[in-house]
Length: 139
Ligand code: ATP
Ligand code: MG
Image (tube, rainbow, N blue to C red; front, side):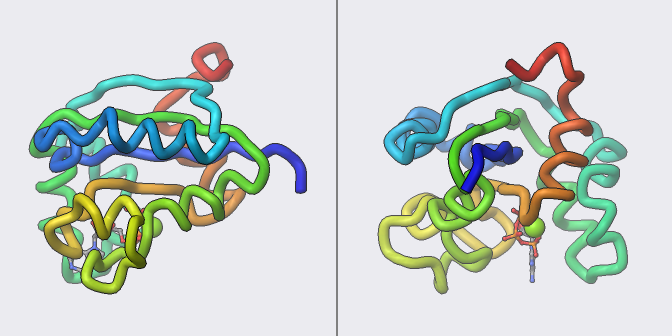
């Protein structure tokens, strides 16, 4: 498997609860390299743009309100099989169903406030990286 890139977001609850350091430690322990990082506080419109695929879902309003409710940390990670490995580190969307030791099992408080986002495939990863970073900003 070749080296691959993925986009991750430490969501407003993760930043607010000061879990950023612990989460980045897990990325690094898992051999994922940080290629870009920035703190942002999304507007509602920017959150709606990012989660546009979910616009028909009944949780879209709550999701975009939450994602624009406070600062987030957005990162590009690189490594072998990075997309699936990050998803494994994150755990299931619903923290009640997340495997022991995963980021969501450890830090998430609900299916909405679930601490972390990770791209779900190579096409999404490329689009999502481009949503936040220019080519010059990714090492
Ligand atoms: P993410 O895309 O953030 O990495 P995911 O891929 O595990 O999460 P998705 O199905 O893409 O899950 O949902 C996107 C986000 O929408 C979830 O991470 C969560 O914050 C929120 N969400 C998903 N399902 C629900 C739900 N039933 N109720 C409330 N919020 C939800
Ligand atoms: Mg998703």
